[in-house]
Amino acid sequence: MPADLRDQYEKILGYLPQDFGYYPEFTAYDFLLYLASLKGLARQRAREKAMELLELVSLSDSAKKKIKTFSGGMKQRLGIAQALLNDPKLLVLDEPTAGLDPNERIRFRNLISRLGRDRIVILSTHIVSDVEYIASTILMMKNGQIIHRGRIDEVIAAIEGKVFECLVDRKTADRLMADYPVINVREESGKTLLRLVADFPPCETAVSVPATLEDLYLYYFSREVVKNEQLS
Image (tube, rainbow, N blue to C red; front, side):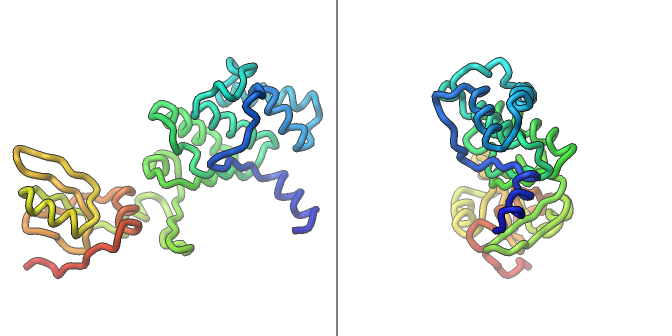
């Protein structure tokens, strides 16, 4: 890539990889100053920007603490801060909530939503609930090809009528779990309630239920859905 074109990309792009590199002995503040210098920020501007971003990601109280003492969520928030040093118009986040506890995931999702107000945020993740809470447009890819694109309700429409709940005995439940992608299993008064995806009703007690984004994901990325003949 030509140097001038690379410089143009670097000016508008912020990136947080799934495992971003950091120096454990650095403090959060010093780490941002170091990266700011690599990105060409003037010293005074770098200091101002570092404190501004630490405040944004709720790390101002930990600015002078070494990164090695941070929790996973704190490190991810610091990763967001470093990605924002150059005020990017396009922010790319790769599996940003992987491994975080529920509280940190919620905090992180809210932060990403705020960041999306004045820039494009591209979120790559397998955690479906993050997509439901954050994304306004969804692109679903399989084998390198985009198979769905649109709002959540638009992409979910692709499997309406293919999600079922079945209350069955344990033997039937075992058979269905072997044959179909099962989303949820719950025991109820000696029977088993299954939520699964299939092209046709998988048993006589199957009831069609509204689809969710998680159902859609399972439909395409679990083993191939068994295409049984429709029950008469």
